[in-house]
Image 1 (cartoon, helix red, strand yellow):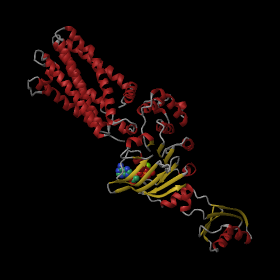
Image 2 (cartoon, chains in turn brown, purple; image 1 turned 90 degrees about the vertical axis):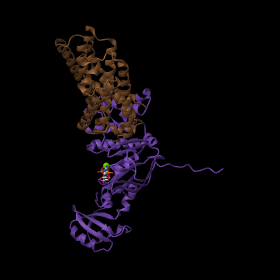
Image 3 (cartoon, rainbow over the protein chains, first blue to last red; image 1 turned 90 degrees about the horizontal axis):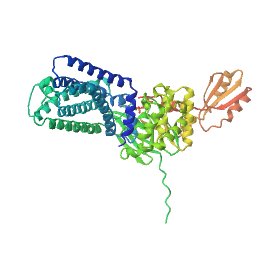
Image 4 (tube, chains in turn cyan, purple; image 1 turned 45 degrees about the vertical axis):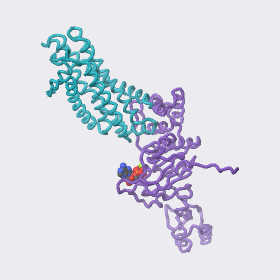
Length: 243
Length: 318
Ligand SMILES: Nc1ncnc2c1ncn2[C@@H]1O[C@H](COP(=O)(O)OP(=O)(O)OP(=O)(O)O)[C@@H](O)[C@H]1O
Ligand SMILES: [Mg+2]
């Protein structure tokens, strides 16, 4: 597999797109603004603020990442550049992997822009390192799943609108499935979505600190997400999208 | 011990190659042979099956029946080997508009696993060959159509394939760019490449190609040297005559001869169609002079490939 050529090309192309820069500035700005707004509100210190910001971040991952990824393959198919790649020794899994990696990195860079805002409540106290670890693992899972949704939608679409719509639907379903499953892992079967989300993100101070196995559940969720991503790559292999 | 004669593998050989789309037969048992070193013209009206054939040879499409071999490799069973030895330029292809010319070629070089130390030289060489050296740093989106077409040709050459499959590479180019493209193809043939080119610009294929195939409704009508195509459609029995004054009467006299099938005035000259290809045309001059006309010209009609094509295909499209 010589995916490195595609990775380099994709990174270069993304770097040249003005949208990449501005969307990052925008995301960082919104989160900082939210942070100040939240801190002026009546959420108490530490855990409350952390939960609110983390929820915002978690939510935005399901929206931003699929949006960024949805057109990465369909666009090449639409513009007739994908077929030329298949003339070379490149095969579908390498292409999907490469694109997944690059757009995963982009997703991760959004997480990084959020870091300063998230770190403030941590410094205010009340949030334990284990909470932070859990949040990181769960956000990572969200990125991987949202990425899979975008890639899957892109593999089976040609039109931009269809790719984006499918990825939004897929991403939405995963955003419901993940918290439900997470809750089930924590052995607290809650059937109301907002409570599931609260347990996942710590919104309203409903951090499940003290719940036994919370960190393990987060790790399990992460591993499952990565497995899901690998499955998506395999699925794409069988679709072998030609010209 | 007997010495076995060397087996000459043709560049392309198809056997009863067939492709259907539902009930529609796009290719109908095509038997085609292209020899190594040929600059092979592939001619047919819209929908004749040119693109379909080239896509099958490029492993982009699987045949519904029959076989096709490219330099000895089967296009279905041995697709990877085929892709390695061909350079395919589709009729429509996209380019990454946000890349620079050299980046683009370097990218494809990397996809073909050309070692990076060697890549720079390869990229420079192909740029030189297609005459894009001056545009090496330009963004592809800013190139003209003709330059993008040249870039497409450069891309096809990056892994030094033996066989080039070019689907209407000159379409959309202005006359100068077309002539330049043809010159590049001739240079490539000189470098030992086998080239199959499909095109509608027949007059250019005529001087460019050493062999042509004409297909119609997915069936092969002719394959062989350009001259052979002329003979097959009965060229070589049309002559042009020019006389001083009174050509209507000369036409009458010529028409009276039994060797003459048809005679009429075209642009102040007389176009003469003989009844048989074997007739010795020297009688024409005889008759004209003996009837008291001043003969100022007599020449054989150079039937262009275009006319050959029109006669062979009867203008049918599907
Ligand atoms: N994907 C397809 N589905 C159905 N029919 C098709 C498809 N592709 C080609 N055909 C049909 O197959 C026939 C041959 O098409 P092909 O593209 O090979 O013609 P062509 O000789 O390249 O024509 P042109 O000079 O217009 O490029 C046409 O009648 C076309 O309608
Ligand atoms: Mg065509």
